[in-house]
Length: 105
Image (cartoon, rainbow, N blue to C red; front, side, top):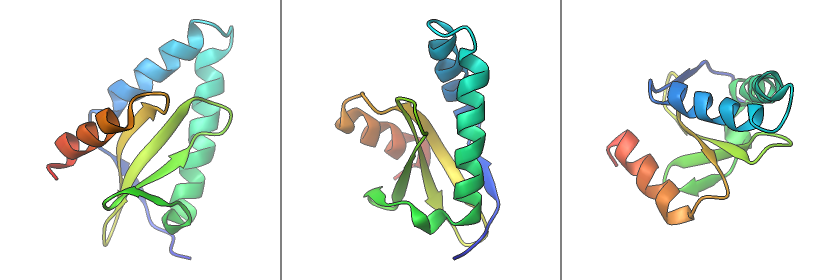
């Protein structure tokens, strides 16, 4: 078990806005609901990022409980970096391309 701080790329703020907007479109408490689930997952990632499986090269994925979204991240020596928060119903090839562009892989 390896606890380490979590940071996010700037573009992840836009991913989170889109996800909250999606949940607001059909739930009265959508944004708050999504944010609560996301924060809970962040605590797990911070506690032990190696708990989550590698999905593509060095990218790991954690599924946000009771949502359609997942968090893609990379474990680096001093920090865990969130690369994307994405709708998991998307085409897997599109998700891989997005991660590659964001991390320059």
